[in-house]
Image (cartoon, rainbow, N blue to C red; front, side, top):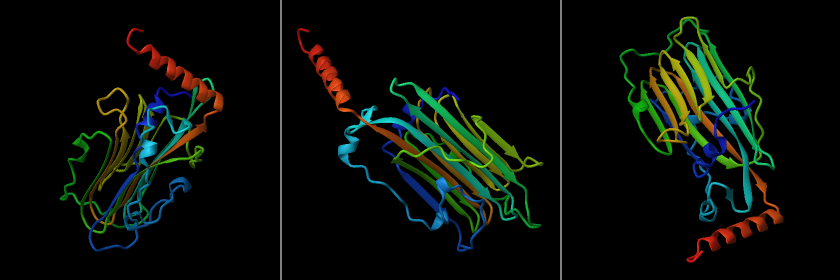
Length: 280
């Protein structure tokens, strides 16, 4: 299906980023069960992981013109997003989606999208861990260009993680159980106290989880805003024994330039440079 996303602009504005942050509150480090993580974003306990990063040399960054890195054209990308929240009473919310964009030889783009949102009601006759007297707020009002990751925690025994990674690979769009090809998906429990949603559109994407113990969001700003392409990940936890994670993964796909195309580009650049000389 086709989406009005200007997708390569979104991908290229992210090529120099690869960041992660995590937090663990209180001394209670007991594991809290979480919904099964898809293979393409599989991690173990996020709070116990050291910050991971991928070095990008100056020689690569110097060639970031918005069209190619070195001798390889960026021909498309696969963007994977996952947010999940596990409450101590067994209730859970999960929203995830993938966007794949490929470009053919005529520079025509084709887009494939997959989304899923699920909510699981409580399984145990116990507290959900929410604390109405705790306050975790303000992070959603931050205005940042580039990548922002905010974690606000008020409570004990919580595990939270924001992570965003970018690499160069030819990954294909993953299979998401129960997903559809719709650009949006949403789910809620009967009382409306636990919600999950994801939406691609208008040049951006938004993922949001809302529970009785706080919220988790991810967003990429649309191209028509002052913060075009900016990534924002936010966790606000006001409770105890919550397990929350935001994960974003971007695979940039490359296509090796042929000798003929390299020569054509060289001739075109030479003609452009000559046209800019005085007297021309």
